[in-house]
Image (cartoon, rainbow, N blue to C red; front, side):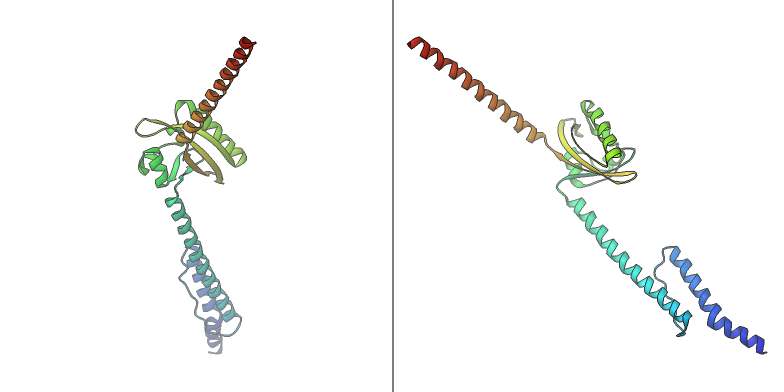
Amino acid sequence: LIDIFIVYILSRLIINPINRLAYATKRVSYDNLNVKIPVISNDEIGDLAKTFNNMIDKLNKSLIKIKGSEEKSRSYIENSPIGIFIISGEQKMKSVNEAACIMTAYSEEELLRKEFGQILSEQSKSDGYNHFYKLSQFGAAYDEFEFIRADGSLRNMSVNAVKISDDEYIAFAQDITDRLRIDKELKESKETAENALVVKSKFLSNMNHELR
């Protein structure tokens, strides 16, 4: 009887708490953080249960912070005025924001069925491959491409991309068509003004020569 009593006491005070801890640990390994171990003693086993419960509380708090941070990041991406593309190592588009859809005139579903290079014009395809090569080698790249909107019109965009994991990149894209047009017009106006100054200078030089 004494042996049975000793086994009972050991089971109640040591074996059962350890089994509960093992079971709780297994549940945590399956991403279940809603688990608590009852603290029924003030010995080492009880301290171990308290430590486990404190660990679970800290994990839950950290998880809440991470989820909050992810939601903020997702909100920033979705509401950004800049086109944002999340692209895999195979150049497949994994996620896009609304600005990217507006810029390309494709729906989100249409873009997610494409590789990034498929929206580039033939003239820019080789530049696109070089862009991803630089990304894979150096972790960041900036280039300007000609792309084809869903309506068939040709536009220009700048792409500033960085590597965010071994098989994932984030690209920030802006339509620079109007900027390039204005730059071209300013350059042409400058050249016209410079040519006009040359003509004026030659005219004045000829007039001075004739007056002499």
